[in-house]
Image (cartoon, rainbow, N blue to C red; front, side, top):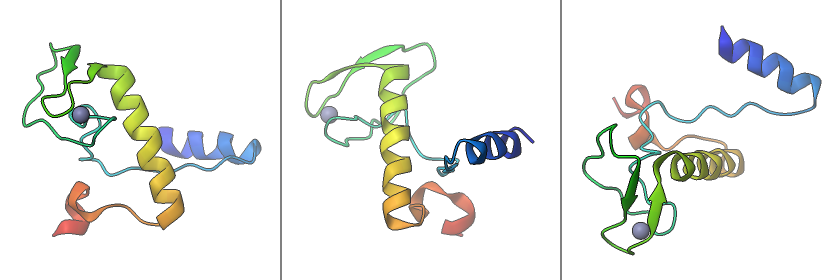
Length: 89
Ligand SMILES: [Zn+2]
């Protein structure tokens, strides 16, 4: 329902809705180097990447990863199967 509303509104402004995979690890992925941490509980709002030491605000990092994933999907025209359970099965 909400997705349909967003799609409708975006089309009015000549925008395009891009859906990323439900299981895309937007919060756990370092937006700088791409490293994915094993676990990141919801109470952790800031974290440091163990691989490149970049300090992340959880929500800012997730927003950047979602934006980049959306652009990647637009360029390739498909989602990454490992982040979409339905496509991986
Ligand atoms: Zn990193």
